[in-house]
Structure formats: C-alpha cells, structure tokens
Amino acid sequence: MTHPAALADRLASGLLSFPVTHFDADLRFDEARYREHLAWQASFDVAGLFAAGGTGEGFSLTPDEVDRVVRAAVTEVGGKVPVIAPATGATAVSVAQARAAEAAGAAGVLLFPPYLTEASQRGLVEHVSAVCRATGLGVIVYSRANAVLTDATVAELADRNPNLIGLKDGIGDVEQLTRTYARVGDRLMYIGGLPTAETFALPLLQLGVTTYSSALFNFVPEFALKFYAAVRAQDRVAVYGMLRDFVIPYLDIRDRARGYAVSIVKAGLTAVGRDGGPVRPPLTDLTDDERARLTALVQQLA
Image 1 (cartoon, rainbow, N blue to C red):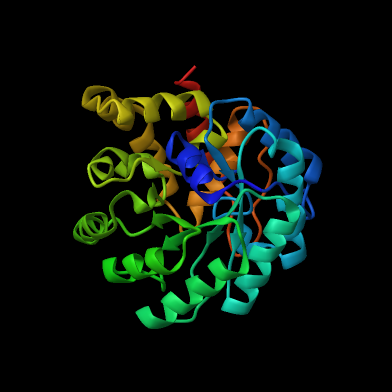
Image 2: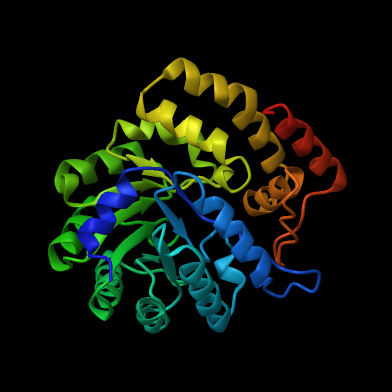
C-alpha cells in the first residue's frame, strides 16, 4: 500500500488526469478499450490517474461497475502510475467504496460530495472523517456543489485525519482558497478541480494549487503536458497563447450544452482516432456539427 505522504508528494509533483470510462454501443462498460486507453495515458509523464471520476462518468456507474473499473485500472497501470479510486454518495456508501478501493489495490481515494444531501460543516467533518477512518489509503476531499468546505473545516479535518492528504477545489473562490492555504499551508496538497482546469491554472498556482486534473490529457496529452509546464514556469505568454488558440475555442464548444464537459472529452478521443464512444444518460453526445468543429480544432495542434 502506498503511504499517504508518499502519495501526496507524487500527486503534487505533476499533472493529473481523470480517464474517461469507455462504453460500447449498448452503453455497457467496455473494459478492453478502457484498458487500452489507460495504457496509452500511462505512457506519458502523468503523476496520477483517477478512475471512475467525474470525467469517467463515475456518477452513472453502479457500485459493481465502479469496483470493476478501479480493478481494471489498478491491474493495467497501477504498477506505473498511482490509481485513485472514487468514494461517492452517502457516508455508508462512501465508507464501503473506500474499503473496496483499498481491497482493489488503489493508491488512494477521492471523496466526492454526498449525492443531493445538503449538510452543515459539522456534518461534513463527520462524513469526511468516517471515510478517512475506514481506510489506510490517502484521502483527497473534493470541495464543490453541496459539500463546500470552509477553511476552518479543512483545518479541523487535517488535524483529525492523518491520512487526509489533499483538497480538490471545484469552486475557485479566491478568498476561501487564500484563507485555507493561510490556515493549513502545506499540510495538504491542493488540486484544481474546476471544469477544463487549464483555464484557471495560472492564477490558482499563486494560491498554492500546484496541480490540477486535466480532461484534455485524455486526448491531447502532449498539449496538456506542455500547458502544465508553462503554468509551473509561470510563462504567461505561452499560457495565454495556448488559451487563446486552443482552450478558449474548445470551451466555446463545451459550453453549448450542459454536460458537455464530459461529452467533449470522449468526442476529442474520437477526433484523434481513438474512439471515445458514447456517454450514458443523462449526458448527451455532441452533435455532428460540434464534432466537426472539435475535430478541426484538434487538427490545428498537429
């Protein structure tokens, strides 16, 4: 088992990504194509891969499918790249998934917000702490949606749970991130978790967010790594040039419909000849016109 501190150091050292989960024409998990994709992703210099995450449509998978996806990822690339498994839903479900992740050989756990349920900060402290107690793996908590953590809550969680190693931020609140880093400092690692995180990567670096999860890495890994290197070097000219020429036009397609933050990634894989396949409902796939626009944009990188 990877020691939580060692995992934190590894994940903070480079770019992260959430691989898509492949489905066949009948929307069944296509393990062969998923494994092929993971092997390709792991052939690049990526610091960690998050199985069955948001981009991986973890919210649309059954618990058995989540376990199967995680085990496939661990078997395929776990010896080369840390595989982080999801824990989702109610506390009891998240606890069970954290234990299953450890049994599957995952390197760590990403704890997603509880589904639908709104909770107080006290309730969130108990929720996160229960998951941390359930496993010896390093746990990263995702602050977003109905589980936005204040700086005081993050500090308490860090004090109570030695294996809490990171905070993934899906809000982008500058004041809250500043308060959190000022209070907690380098006790935790900080991951940028807003959709198409490249857009926010440079300014968030100043707030202690040293890495982020790149959806673009799924289909243009060389570009994603080049962008990350420019962010870490604080090369504003290079960052804004890549934002202008690729990322912002990509966002213009992504923003045409809700849920396209996932759909466009699978379409991007198809655009580079790697067949991303369909998304599961309630998500919808890009239209033929949108796919054509995306393909033309991707071809400009060649």
